[in-house]
Amino acid sequence: MKVKLASNYGFCFGVKRAIKIAESYENSSTMGPLIHNQDEINRLKNDFKVGLYQDLNDVKDNDTVIIRTHGIPKNDLKDLRAQNAKVINATCPFVTTPQQIVKKMSKENYSILIFGDATHPEVKGVQSYGEDQEDVHIVMEPSDLEKISFKNNKIATVAQTTKKKEKYLEIVNALILKNKEVRVFNTICDATFENQDAARDLSKEVDVMVVIGGKNSSNTKQLHSICKENCEDSYLIENETEIDNSWFKDKNLCGITAGASTPDWIIQQVVDKIEGFN
Amino acid sequence: MKVKLASNYGFCFGVKRAIKIAESYENSSTMGPLIHNQDEINRLKNDFKVGLYQDLNDVKDNDTVIIRTHGIPKNDLKDLRAQNAKVINATCPFVTTPQQIVKKMSKENYSILIFGDATHPEVKGVQSYGEDQEDVHIVMEPSDLEKISFKNNKIATVAQTTKKKEKYLEIVNALILKNKEVRVFNTICDATFENQDAARDLSKEVDVMVVIGGKNSSNTKQLHSICKENCEDSYLIENETEIDNSWFKDKNLCGITAGASTPDWIIQQVVDKIEGFN
Image (cartoon, rainbow over all chains, first blue to last red):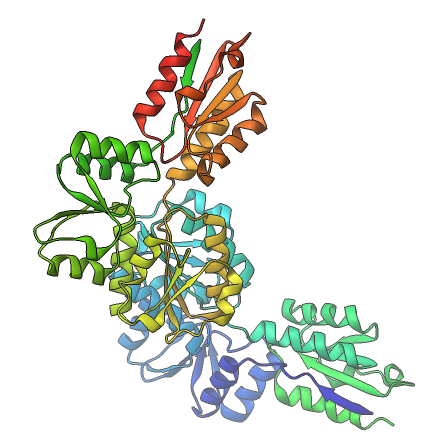
């Protein structure tokens, strides 16, 4: 069976980078899971002795601790260092950017607005870099702005890297209409949308489409739904064991894509198996 | 006849201020007409000996020259000062703001984008404050952005004070999607829109509406058209000589508004005449 991979799929730049970092520090521990994929966490544990801490209190003197792509709040980083842990920072550079913007802008007396989910670790980290925590505000919707009173009429805005640009613009527009200066930093990362665009394109040209990723992963489910729109024979699987060879009967070309938490080695096993069919 | 004035009408803050300044400098000259109303220019000439220069070359040593609300290009100001003229700056403070923003932002290596009409004196003045004239760009439409290549990926934007906010947001949104940082200064003045909003409100509650202003003035024509929507008996006049008393037959309340270039004394003559009707 002929197979074609989407032009973008699977891990984003930041996750690939964090996993390489983890592989280079044997006997280290990540602070929270590095990725939402248990198979990959097991691989790092088995092959590189990379452990997992859920809480700062788990850390012991002289531990090597890896900060995951989301980053962590400024004070947690300080606490880690105070515990004599060796800290390896695998925060995605696209997340470090809004952290540093918030730090700089609040030093320059801008009120800070973050577009994102206040409960998300990335947003908690970014928020922590504000000098005046009472003037760092987090919104999900333009209507959330009504509850906010900024201390300054100069506002600096950043967005959670995985958010949608359209919604960010709606929020920014509402701000511009009410404030003299709005300093808009476009911190949204294209990775998620690049996987979606590539899946859309590929699903238009193939006879059957296989999407690899967690069945509970919202980004994988979205990829599957995009593929279904263009290619009725689109299947969502978690790994190569779920492949059914009847899917490829009378088909010429199979497209493959994968969710943002699907490691390359799982994708490769799927590719190998499908290529093995006549 | 009972008369009610709109809650906002006629001159904006900047024009009122410029005329007061002109009245306090007898024997001065304005650089270009202070206002698009010949009656008012004649009044300043007759009552305060305020003359009119069309060109920098007209200026003679020791002249007192008044800069009008639009402002003038930086180098013209320099030339005026070099000619030993006494320069009285009646530039509207709402126009000085974008001039100073462009100066400061281009010194900080931002590319500059101005939303406005490149041929308008205000925009020419604001533009002139850019340090690197090749990196000061002027657009009227979002599609104009396609032709522009900015030197930096940090953009600072200002708008001509009389432009519409909705269009400014469209342009800003297009910028945000393509640049890492967009520093948006909301320099649009509400005066024009306040007159329109007040005319809309008033025309809903009166039996007849009189709009005073130049018949070629686009802002007066727009006021008239807004009034017509709510009050069929809306009339556009340039001054009190055009009033026809048949308009007020069987009417109880006459609303009055005026375009941005209509002086108060012309409005007062209209009010007095209409109030004189039974």
